[in-house]
Amino acid sequence: MNILLTVILAIQMVAALGMIGLILVQHGKGADMGAAFGSGASGSLFGSSGSANFLSRATGILAAVFFVTSLTLAYVASNKPKTTGSVMQETVQSPTVSGPAAAGVEAPVVPADAASKAKDIPK
Image 1: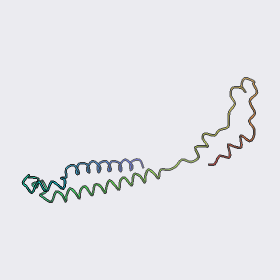
Image 2: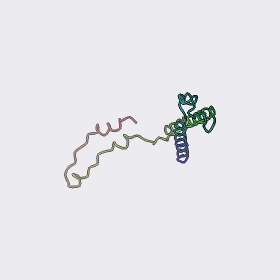
Image 3: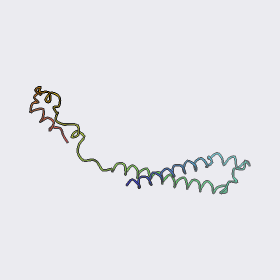
Image 4: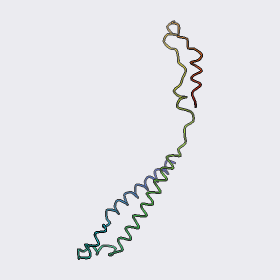
């Protein structure tokens, strides 16, 4: 299960870095207006309109991969096996007498009601 979690997390990191790179490479909507007046932005690697379609689709695919991996990581994290028992079972313990009983001094008497109250704690 730990290897699967690591693989999903690595895929999510690659998708996030890819999305960041693709978003930074894309031109804004206002860049087309400058290309009409001869600024040279239309002569890109993928042509005048091909870059917008390719980069937009690649960004959309990476966004979908990021979304799916995020949901998968949330599902895996919420379905971890729970430990058996209660937190209160570990903390509620009967008092131990160590010092006064060893020295010959009489230990205080614990009433029977106090011992039964520890059992009344809901589990």
